[in-house]
Image (cartoon, rainbow, N blue to C red; front, side, top):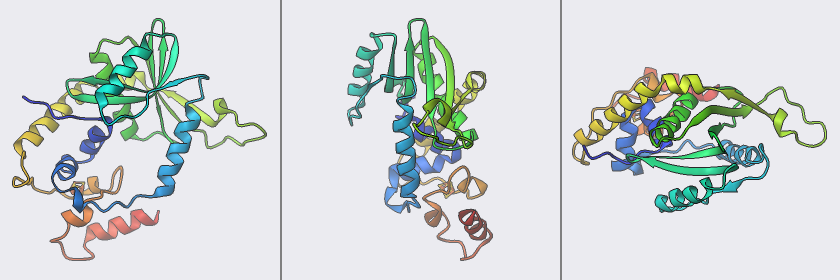
Length: 242
Ligand code: SF4
């Protein structure tokens, strides 16, 4: 089987609904980005702050040529111990960049940064996918963690990053999800092969997965034949209000 290129964001989209990947590939113009710019902006700011959590770090600059990022990572990995942000890897067409990688002498630690004040299931899928890629590349992964905002932190003077962020060790969960990840990657590849062309559109299955964990950008497209103010529209309006 020829594997499609996956990334952690594509994997997480497919966890919500395989059809999102198909639409991204074949009908991206149908997406209506409910994008909340301030949420994105906050996420970027939090990510930048988190980079300093362990002190000095080396960043892998984004490049449209992902192989350049992977090569840069290989070079920086040799300077252990060090901290690398956006360290990038590929296993069998499964690409991922790690928000913060602690590159110790005896192994690595993976840190996924979230601007949320709690941990959602999709974050666990995200880090488990990263574990899958790096584990298959034979890294000794000592720890997989999620860094998220401590809602109880009150700044008093200088910003204290060790108090601003909570760190949750989710290594056991990531390990327990490895079979699931492998199966899901296989399923995504079979799905994208079965519906390989624009003409072969998969059936749409609207349901609660259209709202969780995120409101889907293809909602209008997938519901275009439904009467207005259907039960799903009401559910969606309620969710947007909250
Ligand atoms: S609107 Fe629902 S069915 Fe359509 S792609 Fe999004 S999640 Fe899938």
